[in-house]
Length: 164
Image (cartoon, rainbow, N blue to C red; front, side, top):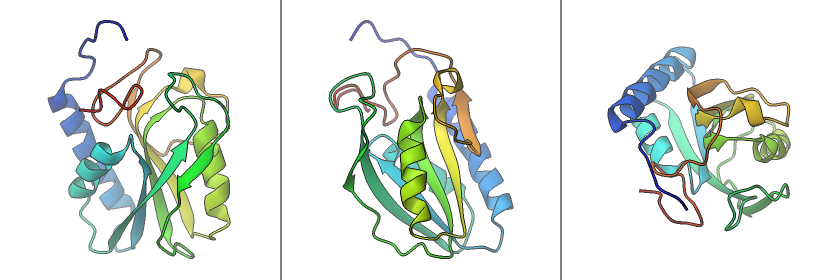
C-alpha cells in the first residue's frame, strides 16, 4: 500500500451521514425498517447512519459477504460467511454497504434477499464508484461518488487493515 492521503474529511462524512439519515427518516416515516449492514466494511457507517435516522421501529442485522479476500480486487465469486438472522418477510429493508464498485456483490445479495420476500429493498452506500459498475443495480442513498482509487478508513480496509 502506497502513501495514504485524506480524501474526505471527517466533518464532511458526518454531515453527509446526517443528510442521508434525514432522507431515510422522511422516506420511511411511520414504517418499520430493517437495516442490514454488510460486514465488515459498513459497520462504522451503519452505526453512524442509524443514529442519524429518527424512526421508532428500526431493526438492525448483519450479513458478511466475501468477494475480495486479502486482495484489492474482487474475485467475482461471492460467498455468504454470515447470513441474516431477522425475519424480513413483508418488511422494508435498507442494505448498507461501505463501497459499491462493480456491483456484483450487491446484485448477488439482492437476489438472496428476494428469497426472503421483503416488502422492499433499497441500497445505501457510503461510496459509489459508478464508473466501475458492471452489474445492474440501483443505489438509492449515496454518500459520495468517487471515480477511482483504492480507499481505506471509516470501515474500509486493505487486507483487514486501515479500517480506523
